[in-house]
Length: 203
Image (cartoon, rainbow, N blue to C red; front, side):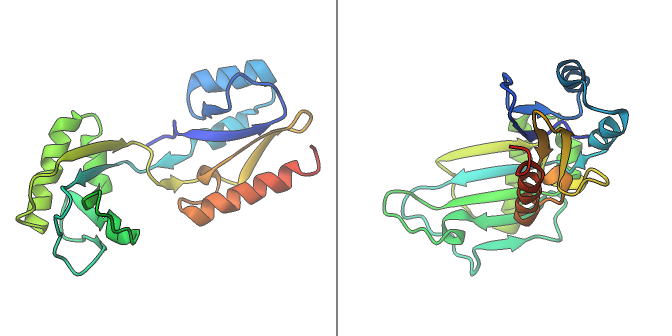
């Protein structure tokens, strides 16, 4: 999936916005017209970034309900829909007499791509049915939240970009994010440090 994910900009210009969608024609037109700095090579680099897609489903239960499994998080390898399940309060080591436990379910990427344009209500029903085959007998949750995660993890980052892309030096305009490194916390930190290095001599 081509990237329309939001990428952070660090700039000394007084722009009207701090985030822009990096692969849309509108963004490229705006950047070209307002800055006149983006090159064809940079445009192609930005357009080449791609992300996986998936859904996340949150299930929230009544106070006092126990989820009787010996783990706080588990990867699922044998289900076409569900990839990861976490008992979120246990994973975060949070015990509360005011709030019940919660489950977070992440789908597989193929499932997410196939169902990305489907109604969230229909997708939630499928995920819930598949969850029942993995954790049978769960009670009905008191609340649910189905999140469409169109831009989940970086598949292909921007080529030949060491954590950032400098579009202009004076005034400074630098873009960064995991689309310029790799998709985890370390990738985000690496990009932030690269942006800092690119800016520190020009601010």
